[in-house]
View (cartoon, rainbow, N blue to C red):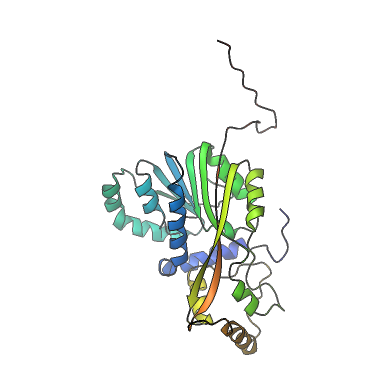
Amino acid sequence: MSISADFRLDRAQVRRNFSASAATANNTDFLAREVSRRMAERLDYIRIEPQRILDLGCGSSRDLPMLTQRYPRATRIGIDFAAPLLNLAQQRGSSVSKVVQRLFNTRHAPRLICADVEALPLQRASVQMVWSNLMLNWLHEPMPALREMHRVLAVDGLLMFSTLGPDTLRELREALPHAHGERVHRFIDMHDLGDCLLQAGFAEPVMDMEVITLTYTDLDALLRELRQSGASNASDARPRGLSGRTDWQRARETYEHLRREDRLPATFEIVYGHAWKTAPKKLDDGRAIIEFKSRK
């Protein structure tokens, strides 16, 4: 996939943003909670009983109780690259894990690991489901991560994910000045992501999209929520701040034209997808796998 300069993300900055958000992330994750709920509804139509589930980009592990309730016999693993969020998950887990285990008849608390999605510390074919809620949008190149997800999934394993599409924060992108760099980083188109799934070895990808519009009292409230949730701009082409009061004033005035019923809208294009890992037709070295069956 060809990556333009204004699309590329600073991964170190992404990690710093999410690490800094640990104190406020659970108070500003309404969108992630709503998307998680809608993802879970899609599981109602999928028949799978995983032994091990990987929550990839788990943050403070807010999705794991739901996955525990749905699959009480499964071992749960949470991986995130922001250690402060995992520390928060550990603190939350120590107070609720016994209750969760008793309610859902589970014997083991989730295993939480700090690691990068492009180098997962898991064995090949070691999990039956990968769940990823709003993580892929923090990668400018999804292929290495998708290949890792494919590697750790067992045959007939399921990848279930959500991510943000190109229309996300379109109002903010149009309101902020463009002269000195990319102020809202770009998001990958659903069709490009579908192509990446096939290239990574997944089969039968199913993709759909919907728009969720959140509203805010003013522009500062939107920017504050993005910052506190860890979703600040991390584009390589980002400027290091607005030029001054004039730019801020123009941005506010531009956004004010969108006010309806005393609220300002912010669009989030949500892309949902799932795909399966099927039995391989080739070995890693490219040789074809030929199955011989005896005649009876």
